[in-house]
Amino acid sequence: MKNQVVIITGASSGIGRSLAFAFGALSAHILITGRNKEKLEETAAALDEAGISCFPYVCDSSSESQTRDMIAATIEKFGKIDLLINNAGISMRSMFETVDLKVLKQVMDINFWGTVYATHAALPYLKKSRGGIIGISSIAGYRGLPVRTGYSASKFAMNGFLEALRTELLETGVHVLIACPGFTASNIRAASLNSEGKITGETMREEEKMMSSDEVAIRILQAYMAKKKTLVLTFQGKLTVFLNKWLNGFLDRLVYNSLKKEKNSPLNETS
Image (cartoon, rainbow, N blue to C red; front, top):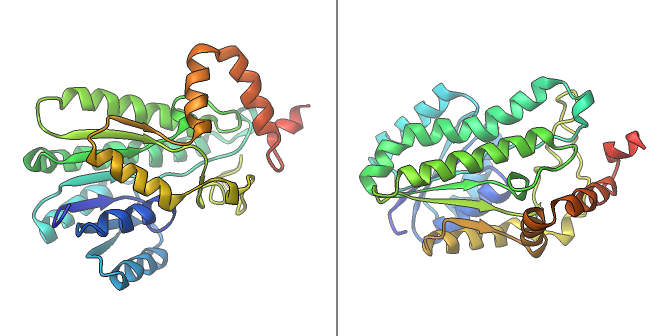
């Protein structure tokens, strides 16, 4: 990865931040994006302190124009792009019946369209460098989760898009990896949206029992270096994918009961 140019969207915290440290430790040049300038600059300062070449760029992934400007700025500064990591994402937590549909659109705009915008703008440069694309998806892209209909839909769409693109790019030398972490200790749950589109501000799960974002980043790095096409993380995640394929009806009840136990679960309101 030495001197390779790596773009990581949504990298001011969580898995994105950890990925910046993981790839940066291998002497790659890192461009990180995020909507919050202050948090982005804090992450950039931490990377600089660790001796990692970092370029922060404020960008809303749901904006096509901002994303294309970000790609243009990358080329202007570095002259190339070797790897695009589509990590920017947001979650939601609400019964579908009561959710304001603008919430689903916002989640789709960031998680799915953000990936599409960045990939479309970067692809000509990635083909030139015979580089790579990583999509940070989710187990929710294999198995739909109740009270997370919008999030699951966005990740299913992301998985389908990247799988189709990977097939299109078979003879170009561009590698595509779809990485699907299970529940990971990060701020995505605290930053999730409720039925009205407001940030919840608290997690509903026991974060300390989950795989850390640093471990997730290392596993993603290893999978990319090994040229894997897909990566499903955690035993729970792998079991969920397996059971959903072979025992779908049984998993419906298992997933329902599991998510009903979450703190303040909307599923309890239907009981």
